[in-house]
Length: 414
Image 1: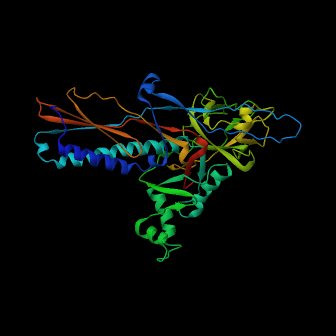
Image 2 (image 1 turned 90 degrees about the horizontal axis):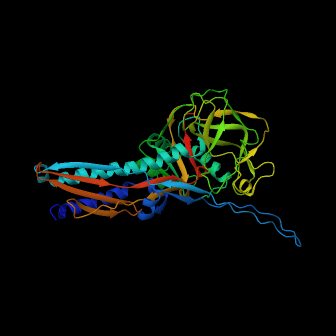
Image 3 (image 1 turned 45 degrees about the horizontal axis):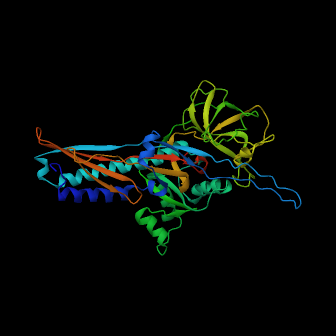
């Protein structure tokens, strides 16, 4: 083949694949789903993935029949919609230095890995509904422990949890380990002092990211109310709908933006399995502003009051402590800052796609797959008229927040 990869180029691709795999720090800590190319093409690159079942229990009375409940399976649409590409050219003079390819290949995989990591970060940062506002700067164990308590009291697993901290916030925690509890006979203190390494904190595997998704300061004002009458707080989950969001009525949506975080007076979070109230206000996010008074929020308000359906009882997520028609909204993102996402690993899914790129049609193609299953495709073509070789590097994937109530953000300096 006229455009066949040389031995040096194949070695360079192996180096690219290895570096790309090592750079996928956030996506390593997600669920993976390998899609079927033929099925995805026929379904317009969209399929539905199941959420975990939640069932209720009852007390058996011997001699009386038990009541069977309808098991409602919730599902979430996942879309293959991320297709980042890096393309570059080298002319016949530049190709005399084979190291050019290696340096450009490194730059290419760093960019693609950043794209994948940033997408995981942004999905959690904008869609995660567990919000922990911290008044001061990042500095000690307590800042992380609040996020752990929030997850545990709502019934989430105490394992496979991650917290990605921005560089400054991560170093704030490392600084606490390196000074307040400094002991050079203690490996954790030494690692924090020498390498700014935090490791496990409050049940979270901590990761350091160079930057976080910026969350702006809430600008809607302090007098906003939300409708909390029966229909609004009795969202009924359905097996035929995406149950991660709900459209609700506010007194005004002026200056609201997607990503705003808030609580509602009188709406308390419950343990998702036992349905016991946590005595802590439920946290919500604005997903979209739909009109002057309507906005879509996440999660929906499933109060399961007044003869609830089986689905409402199973997926109840709030205790309605007040029966008033409206309730006050309190904004949690009072100051613009970078979000620090945290999540249960099985709540975020990386859906893996594949390109069907033909070979032997003037472009040579080489493929490789990372440990996570992400396929990297490299193509090469040559133009005899310009004496330039064109290289392409592609990945194809989607990131889905399967359950926004199992992930969220820590906001410092609030």
